[in-house]
View (cartoon, rainbow over the protein chains, first blue to last red):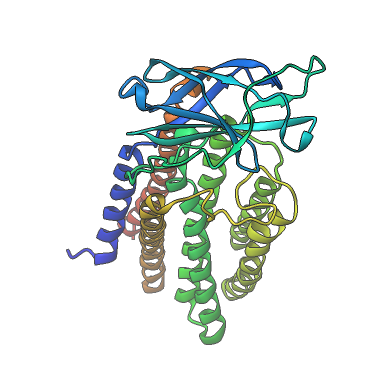
Length: 350
Length: 45
């Protein structure tokens, strides 16, 4: 027995995805800080919690700043590292906010020689106080310099999602592979309508079946991810709702197959329905969710492939994962088709 | 649930992978049952 190269490739790619997807570490990051509010002119001590950080090593080289959106900043006057993941920073806030604003949101930046720079957006909300405290500190530009940027083989740290960023290799490729499988099924459907070979239509059916399996798995894995990052399994988010609609269209496709007794009528109806359903998948998954606010990345106009969602280290796992899922789905579809073919040939002989 | 959040939520990724594997196993069981029915048909020819 000889196994086709692409079947072996699918297993190799999936194993690579699992091993690399789990074992590559997350970059150091700032998990949280407290307090979260203060007033202009005050002296504030911020307790910072880190993730994967090494703040007790080389603690004297630690530097920290609070910065505004327009890159005006103040440095920390005193830095005390309590452990690898705990830090106390003392800041003297200036008595005026930049541009005489009533309130502003400050971003915390911590730089460490081995960890590199870590950022916590909107770490401290500062409002102007009536007390009009005098402060020796002023906003300065260009003081955040010589950051220790590191080229590490690690996945980016993002607040809220944390380690679940790895789901990018297990949840997202399900949808990509589903789309590719449906495109292949549509090609088979066209071939069937042109040439009328029932076995080609049978191939289209089994390919769609695997795409449907991937779709359901995508919904369920997405629900788990949503529970821990959005707070709920199912929130009728536009992306969730439209994905469910896309899946249900293909559930209908399977139902049609079992409800038309005449073989030729069934195959023709199924092929035409499958083509139209495929045409609807792109708008449902990629157009409509971008026209409404959504919690899902890749909504509200921005594609999920931007640098905020993915970097080159992630791409090294993400793209092989898509190919692996697709080829493995092709394998399952082929097994399913061959079973039907054997049964078909056996019934013809009888 | 809060414990999972504290340790960086790595088990959310494990749960995702387990769901995918269970889905594939479910499909293999479906194939197995279809194959059994074909084998039975051939036996009772």
